[in-house]
Every structure is written in C-alpha cells, then in structure tokens.
Image (tube, rainbow, N blue to C red; front, side, top):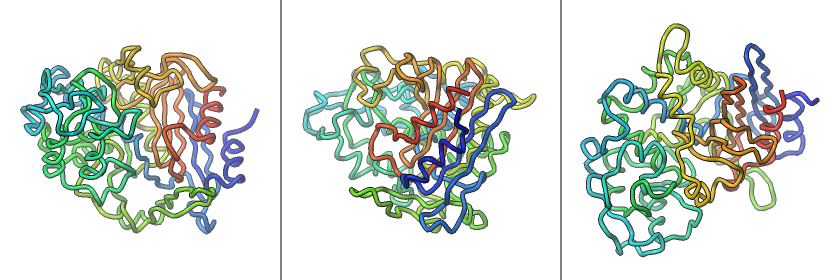
Length: 382
C-alpha cells in the first residue's frame, strides 16, 4: 500500500500543486508528510508547520464557537437572530429564486440561530449561479474567492446585507457560505468581543492552536505559503504572496473562510471534537453540541437540491456529513469540509480518524480535485 508521502508526491510531481502537507491520525498512530515547496520556484521546502489560507475549513471552527455561546446559555438554537442582528429582523425574500431583486415578499418567519448553523437562512449560493438576486452577494458583499482586505467592516457589511433579498424563506433550502459569515458577526455581537478575540480565548489558546488566526504575524510570514490559481492551460499564477491579503488583520474577520492555520492546529481542533468537546480535563463543548455539529440536519429533498452535494453528503453545523457510501472516500458519519484554496479536513468518529490535507492551489469549482480524492481514499484505508 502507498504511504501518505507517496500519495502527495504523485501530485507534486505531476505539477498540479507546488506542495502539500497531509496528516492522517487514528488513535495513537499519526502519519504526517510535507512534500514539495511553498512556492512554484521551489526555493522554500514545504514543512509540517507551513501556514496555509484554509478557506472554508474555517466553517467548522466558526460553528464550534457559536455552539460555545449556546452551551453558555447566551443564546439558543431556536432564538430569532433579530435582537442581535437587527438588520435581519424583518428580511425580504424574492418571490421565486428566479425573480428580479425588486420582486420581493416578507419573510414568513424570523431567521433563527439554527437557520444560520444549518445554512438554511435564505442567504447564500445555490447550484444556479445566474440567479439575479445573487449579484449583490458578489458585488456588494464580496462573497467570492477570499480577499479579506476587500470586505467592509461587520456593521457596514450587515447594512449592505440587509438590502439584499433572500433567495428562499428561512428553513426552506440549503445555500452555501453566506450564513457562516453572518454567524461570525452574530458570535461577536452576542459575546461582546470581536470574532478573532473570542476564538482566540475560547478555542485557539485552550487547544494550543498557536498558528491559527485571521492574519499572520510578521515574525511568522516566512512560514506562509504562496497561494495560486491554475490558468486555462494549467499554469499556476500567484494570487497572494506572504506580504499580501493575510499579512495584516482584516476589517471583516470571515467566519466562512478567513482563517490561516497548520495541519497540527486543525488536528488539535479535530481531536477536541472526537473527544466529545474536551481537551484534557477541560470541556470546551458539551457532547450534545458536538453531536449536533456532526449530525446531518438536511431533508432528503434539501440534499438533492443543494447542487454541491453529489456524493452522498448532508450538512451538519459548519461542515458536511456523509450519509451514504458511494465511493471509497464516503464513510457514513464522516464530518468536515473542503476549502477553495485547496484544503480539506475531516473526522470519522466511528474509527477515531482525523484527516487533514493543506495545499495552496485554488479549486476550479465545487468538485474536489483528484489530489483531495486520493487523499481521502488513503485516509479511509489506513
């Protein structure tokens, strides 16, 4: 059987990525491989502590932060968000998803915390990216590829969001991404702390996630990898250098995709989930909150209509949950997600497995690249 290093090196050798770092752990067995380079010029070897823009594998971390506030009794999943997010107290919804942005009706009921956690609040990306009401999400809210320095501060961002109609009534349909950013603002307002401070105090410091945050300090920029995109011919173009978008704190800390991290930091987060929310003798989350995070909450019809889930996946809080076995990498109960910057992180509670792979080439769309599939296949086999 191939080793983790051999799996990753195959893709570096073929030129699809300059480098990658992978970690697969089951019980006390931990296998880590760092292959290739941090940049296309090959000058900086990839290392176990290389720092990556982790994009949407930020989402499970944001969901965990929200669950901490629920465990604290400061909000409940059933609570309407209006008291903390007055911008969304009386939202409007397009009459049909295909309607123009000015053909709207009032929301049939308030948006709840649960709607945000399950991505069913009515805001976000459907499978049809041509719908008229989607345009403001990209033009006014910068809900496209991560560009942290281009997004307005939370209050201004929420004011803009309030002018955008929802695509669906609350609870009706699963839509991607935007709910995680709204959830980040909600966490800050409920806690009375900026999102980076809350996450640092409640998650990163207790878990020893020393390299995780919304920006990279100057003394660690030498460990931040380049971020690339493949052009039409497959050549890699630099999108962001270490002194770029993540070299200073953003005005809007994105709960949907703003974090940088390392494989060991995300591994620490994953182990906490596998240990029912505990690290050592300290409980960060209740077992029930972890169970809610890692349980599929979608109806079969919502899964079928999601457009992004074609391989037997549902959705928990902040991440997908495998509900069918369609391929070697589909393991019922597997929880986690992928990031558009070339990252993937999952846990398999039934086997106590953690699988984290960080690379630095943007995904071309919602379909995971071959590198991720090969990594998942390997992680499911060990």
